[in-house]
Length: 151
Image (cartoon, rainbow, N blue to C red):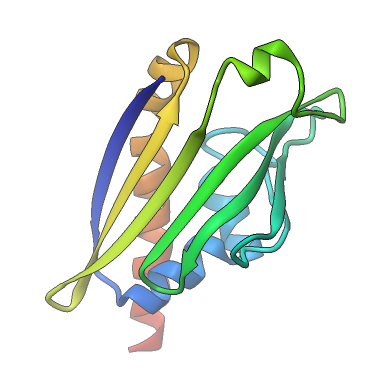
């Protein structure tokens, strides 16, 4: 498992970045870079279970490991969804070990620095290296449009 790191400087306050990143409709927009039609089902509250399905019946099942609003979010991935069926017990899933996705928001003047660290199995490294920058650019544009509209 390899940890990949991505950052973006967003011309918007942390609150706007946080709300845009996790809002149901805006989440669908920026995560469509990974899989068109992706969404979340569940809660962002610490300790809560959350699912990240896509229309083809695949996706991820996870738990919110830590949530410090407007500052830090950690998602622990528990398993996969294949054909609409959750799998947290197969040897394939267990081989992943602990797998996290972490989001850190910090002030950078009047902007927000958004840092992302994601644990990735070798088979998905290239996909994530290619896709995260596009997803972050889309999230950045959404955040900056919302911040501009509020000014």
